[in-house]
Image (tube, rainbow, N blue to C red; front, top):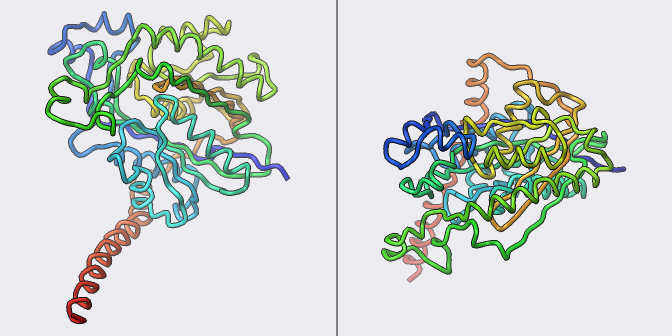
Amino acid sequence: MARYAHIVGWGMAVPQRVVTNHELAQFVDTSDEWIVTRTGIRERRVAGPQESTATLSIAAAEEALAVAGINPRDVDLILVATVTPEHLFPATACLVQDALGAPRAGAFDLLAGCSGFIYALHMAAAAIRAGTHDIALVIGAETLSRIVNWRDRNTCVLFGDGAGAVVLKGSETPGGVLASMIRADGSGGELLILPAGGSRMPISEAVVRDGCHFVRMNGREVFRFATRVMEKATREVVAQAGLRLEDVDLIIPHQANIRIIEAAAKGLGLPMDRFFVNIDRYGNTSSASIPIALCEAVQQGRLKSGDTAVMVAFGAGLTWAAAVVRWGMPLARPRPPWLERLGRITLYLPAQLHSRLMRLWRRFDAWLSRFLRQEGE
């Protein structure tokens, strides 16, 4: 019997702080008109001191699980797509797994630039179809504000922070992720890169002095690459699903630049109203952009039960990816805020207590082992 991977839950989380173009113009040689004309961005969200890739991931995941009505204990796979992990290791996904209280879940991070969310969706859907997993939590999360040079107007105006998540569940009912594809061309790796922080260029005073710990981008070449692959990937994945462009109700593109989205629409011969766009309010949130846009498309009634959507992205690597999804879930019925808060406290407080007890037990176990060794001597 064939198995299908359906999206049964979705959630997003963005920082409270909004940074407008006018605010940026106070300390960078730019203007609202310049940014809007070239990118379509009017404002972006920036993480505060207490916010991070992990905290945003956890908040988005909790919302997605609430929509799905799934207990974290039933999740058996957690993937976090990000280029700004909490740490190089452990994986941010492991921190999410611990915070949610998902003891059955394997967890790891995936790095594929702005294409990361679709890469993770592709892998999770394949695992569900293969029967090795049944419920997967796929998250795209970023705090890009931590790796941009706020004095470089070519990059700092582009990026924002946020997270989006979906819950995938196996089913014998046709639908869900109908087709997906992932591609890469590493010969263009230097076009969009964070040079320092890895084994090739560890962080040092010289590295920081030269600004190599900030993201660097050849905007012109990335733009040329993106305008080619967005159209190509969309056509390829739609054909793979056995559909035609006319069968697609909504296209959710990576929110990097409004001109790239407009070029894709022109190349595909589709009107802009078939594309979901929210770049004006969030900027480029990398791997978080598509799941955030997906959540808002559902909230606004742009994506309804029975609709067919294409998600398509490009990113550092260079990478590109696309997926076709047959939407099978109706708009979630909202719960009162007080009931939502009570439900989360009841569900996640035991997970927090368990995590703390495990940490205490490891310390006690280590102390006991040392004590017994000393007594034996």
